[in-house]
Image (cartoon, rainbow, N blue to C red):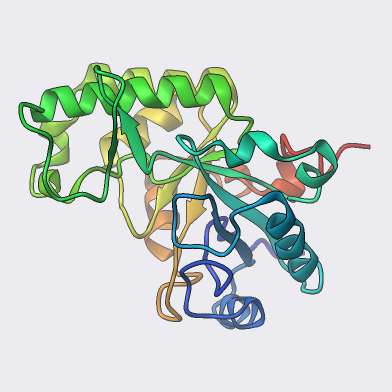
Length: 253
């Protein structure tokens, strides 16, 4: 079988995507990409999947289609903790996201907010981001860490090679490596090459994700694939739950 890239992160109308599941599948196939649907599953995200019952209904629908069955879970929201093992095994893979980071005072800051809390410097923000990731990998049984370099819009004008210290990059990739979690190369929130190179050199598996919400975005993994190849990743080593397995147990035995 000819190798095809897997878009491990795409959204449908089950959450904040514009396409139905069938349309996600059709778009991916039209561009030679293997599709997944990985909708938001949270009580604190734009989604209808906000309870264990709704998770089951979501999976019922995905099982009607030839598509990988994913879910994007917020670390700070407890819903992922409430799912029973038999439900978890129905997912082919699960993604964890830092849509909120924990600050030193214990408060959570939502990363899509444009205004930083008073006194929160870029350096302090980065420390909170990486510290939150270190907690996430210890707690969440996920396969992929989504958009690892996603930060507040108020900081996105900064050169990521200057905003990110090498020490913080090292902590992030070491945490992922130790937990066996893949680093998503996101097409929507693109990581800088240095951190992807560091992840690859450390032995972290890379994953491709469009994080697509519109028809134009879904299944567009050309940039992530090119970046993965540029740092020496082999196509067959890019995360594919059907090849590499999943912590959900979907492919066990």
